Structures are given as structure tokens and as C-alpha cells.
Image 1 (cartoon, rainbow, N blue to C red):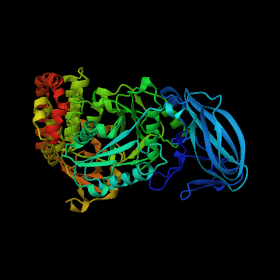
Image 2 (cartoon, one colour):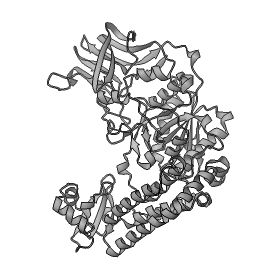
Image 3 (cartoon, helix red, strand yellow):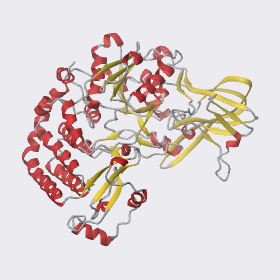
Length: 605
């Protein structure tokens, strides 16, 4: 049976060919596309004589080391469908001490007048690194139609697995409708899919805007939900699955963001991993990496560690078009959680006293991972494409990030104390004051203040109403023509240059970034990557987001700067007096926040 299908790039999903296959290069490094032609329409590669293609890629290499470690799969072979004449090369690749080692396991010449399946066992291969293969055409007009890695493991040895996808959405109808269409065509209505009959989809509609009558079906379940953020939506999904599991028979929950582009075979691979998984790893989480939606080859994160709030995204920035990056992904690192853009875990973890915390957004997934994840399995090809975070600036997040970091640390990092919080807070607030983003300082300090009120305060809040207040307190990006300051691209482009001299740095430090000097003009800066020198002596600044071509303005005010500097200093004293008490209260009483009884009242269900 198949354990991994050989994939082709597809328009509308991913067209980065080198995530799927690599064409041969000349001695000068020029890709020899003239000898191979890929057809998007027919999903096949046509070869001229001596054309070569290699499949040591993100989607089409087989992570043999992980399959061997975590599953009962044995005796792996490669099945290829071809016509014409080829030399097939089976390869084992491994990265050791920075170098890539390659071992040719088998070379075989095959020929067929028409499309025909051939099978090639991986014999004498190491169980480290990656299994892969290459094709060299020995005749013109030879064609490769597809294939799969297969095993002769008995189907009767498979575990009975059924996955429930949980999605939380807020007014993202286009993404939801597109992904439902993909799931229906590739899995839910495709009897040839290994996942057919083993998948249910649950969608918490926080915006109450989805056309339920149009989108719902026997295995797609949609329910309007109170807008309590991602935490509320994903918790509702968990409740729906666990409370009615005598009907659905789900074994694993897979939480997934609403605004992602999915590769259906990632779901199939997740299902097959769980079906073959060894007993000692059956409590494992399976995580999906996040790849950028605008640079589909760029990995943003593959697992992460919390570090008391100093988040570390593992294997960030890798160019997955490179075999070296794919082999680097094979190394397993210590991870504490996987974000809920794609995170799968056994449904048995979800109990009436083990639901997420009601913290709306930012930190709900990591806290649940810190609490429950014993082992995280990551694998090349299990991923989603997602908009990068630098394109998602939201002023209101200042409140949630700080408040929720303190809540998460109260439960999981008891060593996080006054000194660390004061240092983090003071540095951040001074920076925002220098950016004239006074509303952000207010939101940030309010997040700390609300944490210091303890868990009882959080229990008593209407999360939906609180969120409206938080949203209204931040900056709102507007269309450029609506702003009282004109946009000038050369000014914006100039602000991106880093030309800060030593003399200017001394002047800035002595004058609190020019705050106590006469103002000198305006500037336009990147909203998500502003730097202090860009604000030196500026009277007014436009914070510009190039991804949506919107901006907001901030204006220098000496009086307001002094006001928020005083508020920041005042918070230092408040932290000294109240932090320890609030942390102890969360550890003692905060467990009520994750119970089914609490959530039913909170969600009003």
C-alpha cells in the first residue's frame, strides 16, 4: 500500500517546481529545461533523450529515518508509472556534520511502449536521512506520470484512525470555501483517497457569516459561535467532537487556521503516520510546518520553544528548494509546541478539565502544547502555506501578547519574576514612546494591569465585549487617500536604509531620540519593521504597510511622551507589589478556566 504519493506542482496550490523535482544542470549551472518539459495540465513530465530529473525534494523525498523510528512500516519500495525508456536510480541521502552524503542503492534500466507501473525495492539502504530517486531518459518522448513510495506491511496491522479537522474562522469566507472545495475533491468525495471515510470537518464560525446551508454536508459540520477569538473557536471544535464522539468515532483532532493554503497529501501523510505509529509514540502530536504564502519555498517555523516568552521558531528561514534544507529538516530538535495552523493530537487528550485557556488570541496554542505535548513529530511535506506575520500588524495585539504571556508563564514558567518582566516592559514601552505609538503603550500596560487582577477577573469578563474595547483602543490602518499626510514612495524607500552614524547615535541617546530638540519634518516608515533612528526629531510619521497599501499616523508630543514614561515607571511599582500574588492566584484558581463547565457558560452553549 502507498505511504507517500509522488506529487507534482499545481496551479492554485503551489508552483515552486523545486519543491517537487529538480531538473538536471549543465556544467555551467544552467537548468536543462530543454530536455524535460512539465505539463501542469496533464500532471506529467516529458523527456528528451538524456534528460534527467531528481526527486530529492521537500515533497517527494521520503523521510526514512522518521518512518523507521515512529512507525511499523517495513520493506519500502518505489512504484513508478512511465512510458519510454529510463534509467532509474534509487538513492539514500544524509546530512552529517554539514556535508551531504549520497549513496546509490540501485540503478535499473526499464522500457515500456505505453504507460506501465514498475516497482523498485529499496534494498541495503541506511535507515538514516532520506530515500529518493532520479530518472534519466534513454529515449526521446519518454514520459513519467507519477508514483508512490509503498510498503508490503499488512493492512490488517493498521490502527483504526479517524481525524476531525477543527477550524476557527472569522469572516474569511473565501479561504473557507476554497479549502472545503479542495477537501471535498481530494478526500471527502474521492473514494481512491486513503483518507476517504476517515475525515470529518468541524468549523466554528465566529463571524456568523458562512452560508451553512450551502457549505455543510454529512461530514462538514458548521456552527455559529460567539466571537471569543481563536481560543474560543478551537475550544468549540474540541467540545463538538468530544461531546458527540459516539456519533463521529474520531481518534485524533487536527486544528487548522482558516486562512491557509493546504496540500491534501499532508493530511493523507498525517493519517498514514498515525495508522502505522508504534505503541510507544501513540500519544505524540504531529505538527505541520508553516511556509510563506508569498514565497512558497520559504519555511517560517517547524516547531517552536517558548522560553518564557522569548519565542524561538525552529528551522526558520530555510529555503526548501535546496536539498540541504530538506535534510536539515530531518534533524529533530527539542520543541515545546506546534502552532495551531496545523497541529494534530489524540482526542483522548481533550477532557472535561483539560480544555484551552480563554485568552482569545496569541498564546492559546502554545499553552495547550506546553501543558499536553510530550512528543512532536514533524516531517517534510506536512505543512500549510500561510501569510507571513510581518503582513499582519495589529495594534491591539499589544494587549493580548503581554497579558497572555504572563498568564502562560504563571502556569508553566514559575521562575519568571519581577526583574524579567520589568526589564521587558520598560524596554518595550520606551521603544513605543519613541515611535510616538502612545496607544500601543496604553494597551501594553493595560495587558499587565489586567493580568495583575488575577483569574477571577478573567472568569467574569465577556470576552467578546472585552475584545471590542481592546480593538477600539489601538491604531487602525487606513487607505492612504484618507490620511491627512500624503504618501511619498522615495521617502519611504529612503527610510529603509540603515545610515545611522556614531555621532547621530550619540545625539539620539542624549536627547531621548530628539524628543527634547526642535522637530524636523516628517517620515514614512514600515509598520512592522520601524527603527528608532527613523523617528529622530520627526514631528509626524506615517506607519506604512506595503502588503495592503494602508497606513496610520503618529505625531510627536513631548507632554504625552512624559505622561507615558511616568505610567511606565508607575507600573514598575505595581509589578513589585502585585505580580507574585497574581501568579499564585492563577496557579491556584486558574484551573477552573479550562473546564467544560466554564467554557459552556463562556460560549453560551
